[in-house]
Image (cartoon, rainbow, N blue to C red; front, side, top):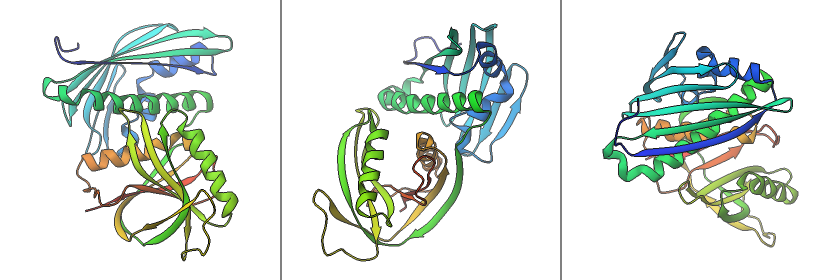
Length: 300
């Protein structure tokens, strides 16, 4: 039951899943499968889980604690859950999922009404922005799980490690988050055309989920400063520093799982992030379709 009079955050998403409605309903109704596509539990390798027929509860140093209860279901039509967060702060949500046949596929509409504690009212816009990202991540993992039987997103938590200084040549761009994935892919290929042997990295100067604005640099790491910089590109120096590092393996569309996990680890005080240099990522292979990416969060 949502708290009466508490600030509400409404979120609604629709996704077409290439699977019969019966299979989609079965997966969504199966409480045991919910942790497999949870956008929070993927960030917490040591969480504890209690799964029953009509609910599951979790507790972890990163993901906090909470519980999801089945409220009602109508076969192949809809499911309603109550989601209660206990830590890191108390809040409640009502989740309603409706299904409709879409040719040989299933259209899934996922509606959330999140109820915040009054002391978090001033953070409503930012909390809503982060929740929207979380539910987009979860929805994509659900789609993959139903369509292929697995979620192609894998995290490795490397922890504190030194990051050596280096110089980089590349492109600095800014704009809207809408279409960002396509924009950075284009920039990646543009940089690789100039420096096919160079290791690509990106630095994120701005990532504003509320305003949907981003500013970033994408370039290649070089051993020394080049004599000539191509037109339209610029040089940056990345200083040596200690970083909190995570590695993500899987399609670029799932890379936000790694960045969200890093944010959650910082919030859980696993590390203290420094603002002296922006966070950055290093592409450890040259497979854009399913890259291996190290996420580096500068530490104090």
